[in-house]
Image (cartoon, rainbow, N blue to C red; front, side, top):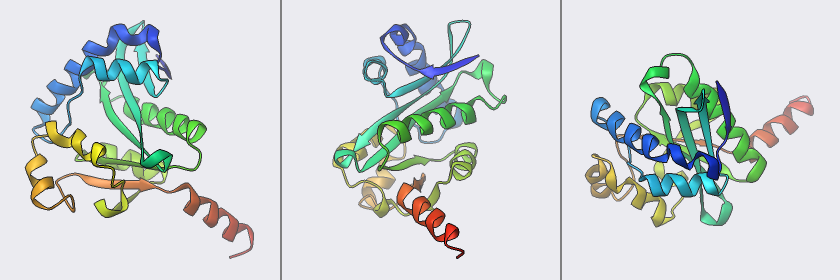
Length: 186
């Protein structure tokens, strides 16, 4: 199994990834925003995606979105092919996309929204903290991405203050300050 930064060579997997996201949304019955194969292809071409391959077959995927002129980065579209679930692959993909985010967008706050307990646990292990939606990006284009989610009406009824998803945020400045304070004997 290899987990690598996706590029234009991996576009051949974009349809399978899109279908897998859609099917997962149906099976789970929870909110998952759907993404087209074209949208996924663009993430691959820009170097803002991570793909897991097993003998050149799609095993898992996640991509990065940049918001607020680089102040925020979101990890989205985390999906693992059903044949590879339950093996810790989602965690490895999230770790790799987290590292990619830090490399490309060192000062950005990293966030995600999810209804999945497994993803919440992975995010927590990476240093994310649960936050209210007001601490996430206010970029309206980010919230438009939720329109394909079956719970979008909850989000709009509450004027984007809450939904069934949990917002989680990693703030690199808080981590730097924590390290600085700990090195001063505090």
